[in-house]
Length: 381
Ligand code: F6P
Image (cartoon, rainbow, N blue to C red; front, side, top):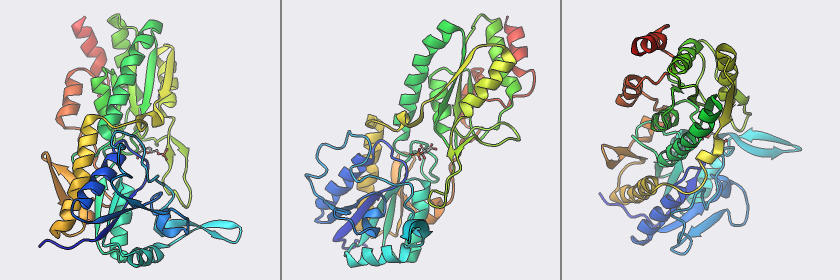
C-alpha cells in the first residue's frame, strides 16, 4: 500500500566512500519529484543531538546541484557519533552517553516521517537499534569501500577503491622491477579482503593476503624465490590491512576508545616486508595506500549504483514497505530487513571463482601447503 511521506531526514555516517554525494542527490531529487521535503543531518547524528546552527540543512535542488561526481559528503560524517555511546561533556570530562531517546524525541519533534541512513555495517546496526528505540521508519543505504556489508552484493565506493588500488599496483611494478625488490602494498579491508583480492588480481600481484585466509610466511617466500629462479627478480604482495599470520593477530595502530569502539588497523605491510626481507635476503619495501582509496570522486559504476540506491530508498518508502536496507541482488535494487544485515559481515568466500582464478594463475595466498610453489617452479623450468 502506498503511504504518504511528507518530510524525510538523511545522514551519512562512518568512514566516507566515493558516491555519498550521488546518493544525497538522488534521494533529494526523487523525493522532491514526489513533493517530499528532504533535510540533511550534519555529521552523522550530530546535527540532531547538538544544538548547533545548521545542524539540520534543507536539501533542495540547489543544494544537490553539481555534487554527483564529488568525493566526500556535503553533510560531513562521523565515526565517533554513535548515539548510544555519544561523546558528551560531563564537568571537565567527555564521557560516552546513551542519547538515543533524545535523538528519537527530536526526530519526532522535527516532524520527520523517515530516516535514510547512509553508512556501513556500524551505521546499519545503529539504524536498526534506533528503529527499535522508536524511529518511525528507516531505510539504510549501504556504503563502504570495503564492500563488507552483509546482504548486498556490492556497496558503492568499492569499485572506486579497487580502481585506485589497481592503478597504484600498476605503477609500483616499474619501480619494484627496476630495483629488483619485493614490495608489500597495504590496502584497506578491516575484516575482509575484497579490495586486496580484486586489485591484487587486476594489478598482477604475486601474492594476496586477506583476513579470510590467515597466512604463513613459507609459501610467500617460496613464491618470491620461485620467481627469482625464473629470472623475475621482483615480487609484489598486496595485503589487506586486516590480514594476519596463522595463529597471530591483526596489526593494530590504535586500539580505539569508548567512543570509537573499533581498533584502527595498519602496519601489516611493514610487518610482512620485514619478515620476507629477512627470509629471502631481498631488499623489501612497504607502502600503505590508506585514505587515498577513499578520496576523490566515484567511478561511473559507483556513481550509478549510488544513484540507484538513493532513488530506491525513496521508492520503497513511498511504496509503503517496512524499514530495511537497499541492497543489490542479481543486478536489482531490493529492500532487505535491517535485522538481516545488522551485526553481520560479508566476507570473501575462499572457494569463489575469483579466488580460484587467482590460485589457477599461481597467485599465492599464503595458505598453500609447504612446497607448493617451489615444486611448481621446478617443474616448469
Ligand atoms: O570501513 C572503511 C575503512 O576504510 C576501513 O577499511 C578502515 O579500517 C577504516 O575505514 C579507516 O577509517 P578511518 O581512518 O577514517 O577511521
